Length: 277
Ligand code: NDP
Image 1 (cartoon, rainbow, N blue to C red):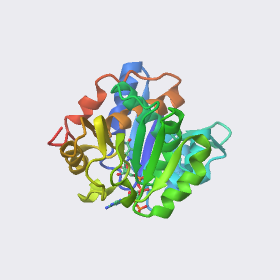
Image 2 (image 1 turned 30 degrees about the vertical axis):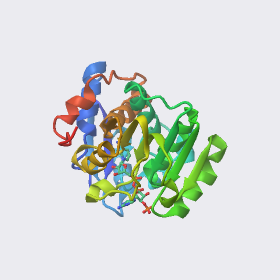
Image 3 (image 1 turned 90 degrees about the vertical axis):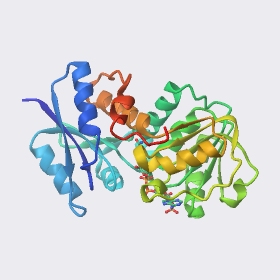
């Protein structure tokens, strides 16, 4: 019988993970099954336990269960502990769960693949939710000159700066403080695009040659990327490449082999491409 894996979320019907992991398995000649499971909002742990009892070997976890997954693990990777969120679970033979967070590594791998340098650069990250908690450590590991964090609820950005300042030069600014400042990379880590809105960013944020990256992918990223392009960003990207890379890292953790991700974002993007890209 094939090894079983799944992604747990609510909602999860939109997930591209089953397609992605099916393709990884094909490329790596591995025999496995991967499905999407919508856990009830008040029944995440029961749902995962039932999957483990039925032979599940590992799982991905998405909104809104990453914090619950973190709390349920006996052992955590350093990056999952730091992010206080788990997106990859390994179910061990002794019944314990190991948790990791591959989101930040996924973003950095995608930026690297796109030729976007981070060392010595000025980076702005907008947002302070679960996804931003996952990317801050890996971004700071790339030694930017400065990483500025701006969030609608300023105190959340301040809390993250307290937690991550030992890792590198990170500062919490209000949106008003951004006026007149410029950056090499602006990362939208908010979920604003999902409701068709934009974070209140001032004009003139982009240095010559600067890039914009939205963690959100598909049509929901269009408003931010259109704004970035018209505000002077030289290149704009949605989060599809990050999605592919974080999934490849989860596959490596489970199967011990990292799949070749070449061309997969474009392959997935055929059904999600925002009109302006
Ligand atoms: P959270 O709900 O934890 O956080 C949402 C963040 O967005 C908060 O900082 C919130 O601010 C901010 N926000 C929401 N609406 C607005 C708005 N209208 N204006 C300004 N700020 C706003 O979500 P996550 O951090 O888990 O996820 C963020 C996005 O990243 C999601 O859309 C998700 O799809 C995407 N993502 C993509 C991945 C990929 O692989 N490409 C991986 C993981 C996530 P406040 O604190 O003030 O409420």
